[in-house]
Length: 384
Image (cartoon, rainbow, N blue to C red; front, side, top):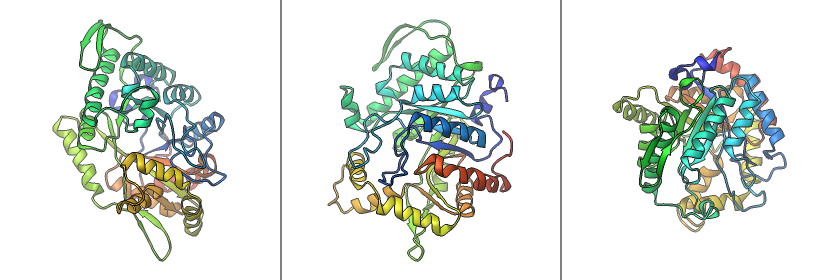
């Protein structure tokens, strides 16, 4: 498909006919999102990233979405301490692929909008219209201290993000120089050329969880990322499955709020932690082995402290720890995995980002066995 000719609606569809869009999530970061000490854990080298991108492109996956990580966490594995910066990663990945969409993840307070706008347009031209932006405001104080900046109060971060995205959009669309006398940015005679590829703008994605964050995403972005955070455990088999209680209402609420603003094409996405094995028993056993018996617990505790502010002695800590290590599980044989992904589509999700312990080892089975099942269910097309 000629991306240069894609209207906005086609960019929103990621240039595919797939009802349920599927992507590879967090391959740019060592260990992905699995804090495990198993020797096969993801190293995240560039050579491996390149192979993952090309194999995903060839298999017909729809997008690659990186994690914006600057510092990582303590622990036996140096969890997420090694990562590729996402815009340069996206540009190189787009140059090496043909069809798949590639996102960058940008922390608003750390990237000046005039610089970021041109960096992202460069990515967009490299990929001939296949670039998207995951816009984030940041949540980790230690990361910001590396840049000599305090982590601003929550509402201020989104107020800054509103100015930031307004500037970026103007740089992408306006030919004349403009001034911007804002609270966070004061610009004189701002300009940026070239404009995004093909006359349409890169897709904008946001995963704000708070009411303010959700309002920002619905007001400004093409797609909203929300997580299915709870899970259930079958005590008889040890099978862990997502808890979908109330999820359909969350998705419907996002769409209703977007419609109130006249935005009827917003996409709703989520992410899952996949363990797919030829048999259900193998999948359950690997979950126990990798994410429980061999978890990097120091890294898990460090993340929980930074994100929640809780210590292990807190009554709420155990429940948070359990849900954290399960990481939105989609665990099972190909039939089980396909059925769970179909459930997500039926709940109203347009797309799902997938993370695994080792992308090169595990995704080939997903491509060979799960994608055909989703095609048979009418959620995927055999051609883009």
